[in-house]
Image 1 (tube, helix red, strand yellow):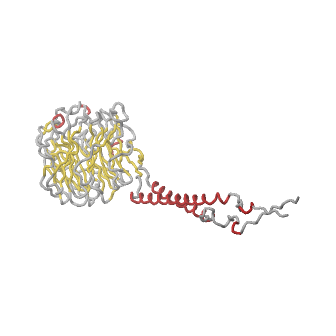
Image 2 (image 1 turned 90 degrees about the vertical axis):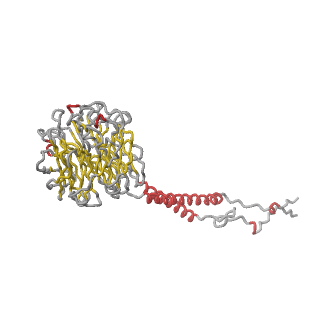
Image 3 (image 1 turned 180 degrees about the vertical axis):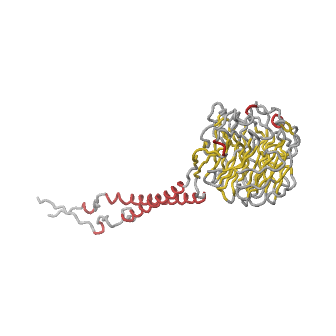
Length: 564
């Protein structure tokens, strides 16, 4: 028997197995070339990197604001380091020359050993100070008292003060002096008002070089430590010739507010005249001297904080109540009350007012804001960053607005003393129009005794009616009454200053930061999408190219031929 031969026919040409290197994929899709895939991935990565870089750049400009104290405290008045000089300097009024911001001037009252006043001048931004003698008017007792200062837009310095008369030291007249050289020399005094003018304040219109405003409390009958009866109005007058002549006085407060005190004037961004003051309501304890000049519990009723506004240069007035439930925290003499503080953001027209209040059981500093175009004040915002009900006192805030809109608040602070006696000076600042504040800076480098001052023997020591504060874009200069050189027996008070430096949050406009973020995110998303697409296309092609090639069997290959 012959063995049969098995033969296998070759597959037809059409049945050749596919070649992978340069042909099409079995699935029908075109194969992604390796070089093109690498390029796509690189472009995607580049887009992601660029997008992330833009977003990081925008976030990098979101630097948080910070502040720090520069150097130690230094005295203002020449006798601060003289042990034998026991003068009680307090209530500083600090202004700067609009023609030369390095030219600063401070006026302050002196309570003891005799009633007087002082004028201090600096031409290096407050590093060094000199004292300018104040000429006294002929025929008056040598008792200059309660001065105030204002720089006009043309750089002329104007100073007001009252002269006191008799054993009761009653105001006898209001006087004005001028200085064309930044306070180095003063003109002869010119009489501006008659007797019983209390709490005289000056302010200048920054847009009108010769326009000045004067506000005061018009006394009618006074006694020891008191106004004998209510109804003493706050008045205002205007000068358009640099103080040479004055308009007829106009009442600022509404007639029903019969116990108005402590007028604080300011000129708005459009030339409006504002006067912030206290309405004591039914408080006879302080206004009419029910305490007889003795310390003790504060008045138990409520006060109001009121803003009066005139849009016709002081001719007519309208009022808005800032807060109608101020809780008094201390007693005071009606002639020298604590002043509330008023500041204007001249860029936006926003108004700020501040005062201390005891609504939470202990004195705290509060801020109220009036937005441009609004007639309603914001709710009170606590400035001092102390715990509620901590039994420490924060008192007598002073406001100042920097050219970039930063709001600074300077105040007396006793948080570090469990006995609530030792006083420090704190500064807190806001970059969001008073909604929130940076942590406090302790501007005073050591605490001092709040019990040293005129009236301490009666339990009512007086640190003064206001503090001084000036703000620039980079710095803030604070001035306060400091008792570190005195004792309760000597009553010595000096003016001290502290300096703070600021790093603003950032200078990049919000719209540009937003644009950078949006573009960065879009580029990053585009890059991620490109990387994903590239990877997906490679995923479709690569596995097939790596599988071993197996020839497809032809059904004819199974047929056999048997040959004889």
